[in-house]
Image (cartoon, rainbow over all chains, first blue to last red; front, top):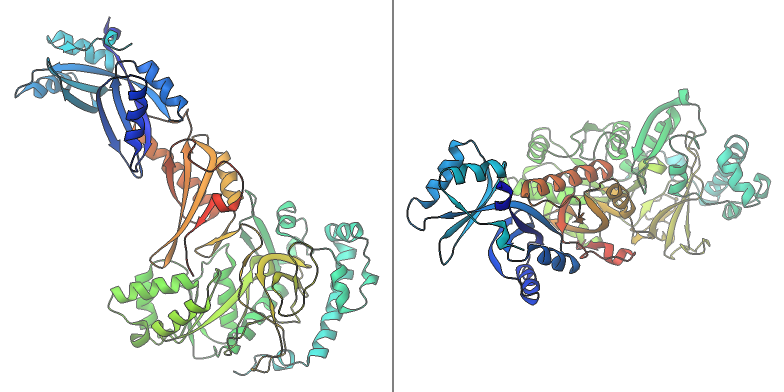
Length: 143
Length: 433
């Protein structure tokens, strides 16, 4: 049951030079794939573009065909109150449970703000958040 | 400057050629009798020692190449017993296998003698302090220059490479008058000194440099001499010949190749035909007195020409001009020879990256910087930056240990590196000399 909240994020290797994000976004646009959220992690000369999209399998195939290096990563999407203390609530639940956050990014959508988390124990994190009355994005949103 | 060994250095040319012929003759007989490798080569070429009747007949002898040393790894083509060797030096091969050079006591003596003549021809001698900033160790540069300088009675300061501030302090405190290093390292020393508020020209006793192990130009000589207030001499050699062996004299009109130790030929790189003096071609050397590792008509791969006519210094031995380039794709980075095939070979053993690569060589300040661009393999691609950084470090480490020179690695997207063979795309050299 925890598994139904584990979402597939796509991660794309990208060189750190002009036009690379445009190339990735253009490929997704051409395939009619919608991006819910994304972030860019940068290192020395390269970066990783991480994105939550509506059709991760299609996006993976499409980008791989175009020659991109792509992988799936399990993440969870936690709904937050879009008001002061929203992030603090979620972060405290995980901190108290001893669950480490590897990275996170967030977007503020129509209904709520969503925090996307990569944690070391995803199923534990799901249990803790649900147990504390939190709400998570369902994997079924993403085909 | 006075000759170190006038009898040899100023020997009339016809007498020198007679001496060379005698030495070639005995070398070929010795190899034919005792060296399986070279006897086989001679038989393949259908040449017998008796066929060498004049010095020109050397052209009948088969060539040797760097691959012969690699194939004979470690000591299969040596002509001395192991217990006769007093030293080994090891240099990188064209692929993963290094090449080993062994020396008998006499080989070391001749090597030192060669450099003693060379250093003397530039005026180095007793009372001079020479800082040897070539690497000491398996590389021949440091120990070679060291022995040669001690032989002429100079005081050696064996600084080796690195720790540049300290080198500059010692240069001042110990009244260093000469330095042996790569031209780019000397430029680096000059820059670091300026940052320390030290002018090499005004605040040190440095008056000459023996610069080599990498290609440089007359333009660069002009810059170094004006800026640092020294005479800059070209020094030449490779580990297969022993190490650094020959330099220019104070005339700065070509590098004297001591004819009793080495027979120089310039050959057409494609046909192997011997070229006339003045014609550009591949430098080919026969070491006439080497005991442990014979080198006959060794194709070094450097392009140059024999300078015509006698040198104003009075030395009769032939001279070669500046090295104009390479016949192969060998690069020289911080004085270290690097073959793209070595990079290829090293990458094959690193599953985290693909086999395609591109080498970009640049000069950051005065020093060479080598960047190797590689593609992350599908299996190794991770969403985590830390894991990708580990891959980068692993590749840097592996390349460093197989090339003996530090390398920056850049991870690039798959499919972006040139797929076809050829130096023009695999190697981008942005340095200007």
